[in-house]
Amino acid sequence: MIMKKIDISSHINGIQLSSCIMNASGALCTTDQELSNLFDSSSGAVVTKSCTKNPREGNVKPRYFEWNVGSINSMGLPNLGIDFYLNFLEKKKTKKPVFLSLSGLSIEENLFLMKKANFSQKVTAIELNLSCPNLREEVLGNDLYKISTFLESIFEFNKKPLGIKLPPYFKEECIINMSLLLNQYPIFFVTCINSLPNGIFIDTDNEKTVIQPKNGFGGVGGSIIKPFALANVRKFYTYLRKDISIIGCGGIYSGKDIFEYILCGASAVQIGTQLIKEGISIFDRLKKEFTLFLKKKNYSSINSFKGKLKNFQ
Ligand code: SIN
Image (cartoon, rainbow, N blue to C red; front, side, top):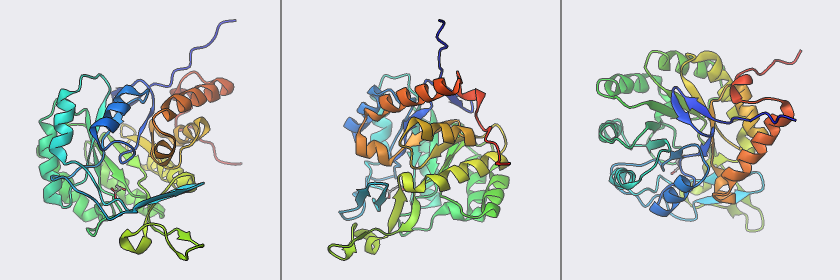
């Protein structure tokens, strides 16, 4: 019997990925050791922790908590500063695509970071995080006007493939308006979604919150948010220009979850909460599970079913 080869490679607007599975920014990708582990793993790309101009300690601890179906965090962008990430990448010999995640605390800081990142040969693409829910500063991803003037400034100099990490949207009109805006610019990809903002998880034994910053309010991730993330991917797939790729993120635990994201229109997926829970070996497990799932479905590549979700009728 001839075994059909199952190919789970993909591309993000032309950036080739040997596997469509990568880490989400924030998940085990802050330090030298964590990044080295990701480079050595079977992930299709490496995404760095969202960085700022200067190193940051982040919010007070405890700032991360997980339970069986979710996680809540208010990390506050702890990171080693852009120079650390650029220097680390400079020394790294790798063919794996690198997505440098940037999350300046102001538009000016983001422009500074974007300019710096543009000088690095080692940065394959920039993932601009406009959706961190854990800062005092307003989330730019909710302000179309500011994003539009910001993008105007960026594309005066930017030569790097650029993607934007978006917050979850709960109204179709928000996704339509954001798509209409992004469709006007040479954006390479969007990442949907960041954690669901302003959640709370309660420790009933002690009758208190489980994280300290912001009185216990934080971004919720994990399987519990998957339906919202899938819905955002599906809607953006409907309204974005077809050459803008979508990276799906939110609640992936199994190969079947990855299948669902691609069916909704994602070209690749990112793993956050479950990577933190399970560690770096998750990439091998997910690759195996996803390949097996495709084999059972008789698909040999992700292009055979990408975006082809059918409506119930
Ligand atoms: C954080 O560091 O607070 C999380 C980053 C994010 O959700 O964008």
